[in-house]
Image 1 (cartoon, rainbow, N blue to C red):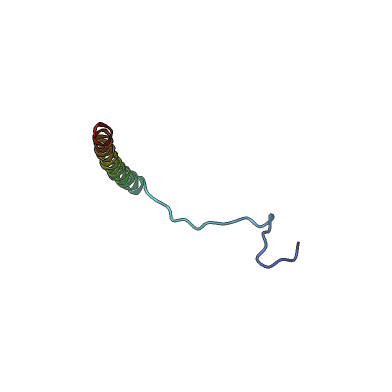
Image 2 (image 1 turned 90 degrees about the horizontal axis):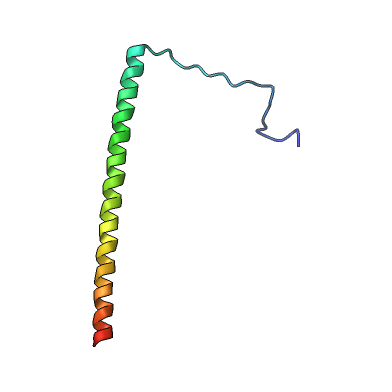
Length: 72
């Protein structure tokens, strides 16, 4: 399996050409990522709460219907 197309060479090192960033730029990136993470977490919590309330509502309605069927 040495002569396969698109193979992987362990001796070849991957080189990255990343730009240099100043401390100010890194702080701006850190602040932006924190804000994005906070907004994403707020969305997740809100969606979870809405879904939970919906499930509770459906459960209460079905329990109400079941009790009506049993008492009828």
